[in-house]
Image (cartoon, rainbow, N blue to C red; front, side, top):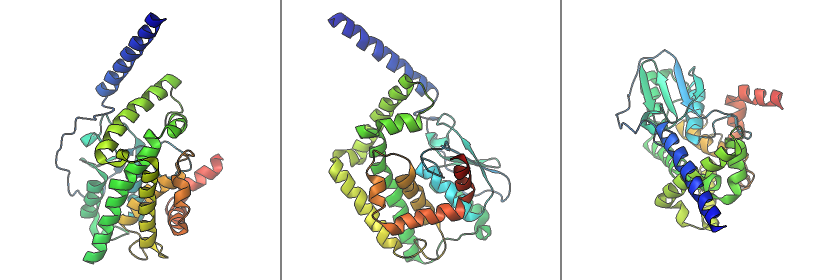
Length: 293
């Protein structure tokens, strides 16, 4: 019996190592190695904009399951720029990250530099403009950093690390994959994310403390939004695209094991904010969802 168990463990280890090697050879974890090239800062107006990221339907999301991809698509919709989307992996991604964008001969990665590129390229032709007031600019950066550098990681805990999320991960993200592959990928992702979140700091906390941090962020966003339609005034800005990318994923990713959706619903103005952007800027996708149901 002991020899059989040893054999099983050895075979499992070999299969796991082979699969990890395969994923790495395909760039699934490291992308193109991260060239660290400086992003293009400005292009020529016109030409096709192609946004590459995760766009597979998931839960009730109209945007991407990636808050960063969701953010860029939302900004493009706010700005009134024509674009198309395509699904892609990490293998061909500049900087080894998603999303990335191609515009003419320019390739730009990292959502922050992608949007700065669009602002520099199209300027006053964009339907939305950022505030000139330094105080509002500071508020905008603060909202973006909170959503992208803190709220993202606390949600990753409830998506990747919390054992209760296993069914969501396998049935939503890898619903078309063989059971063995979805299970193995889950544990590989869980290992990678747990290392990342431990260094980042989230995973040094208990579930209760993580949820406390989530609620603090939501309360802060709710206070900043108050009764306004958008965070910085009557019209949407980059801060709203960033907040929407995060909050739509908080509300509608279909992860029933997560406490996050119920936490967001305690703040009606945040729910209104998300639903109003979905209705105004994603009507095409909402209509498709309605027809599919």
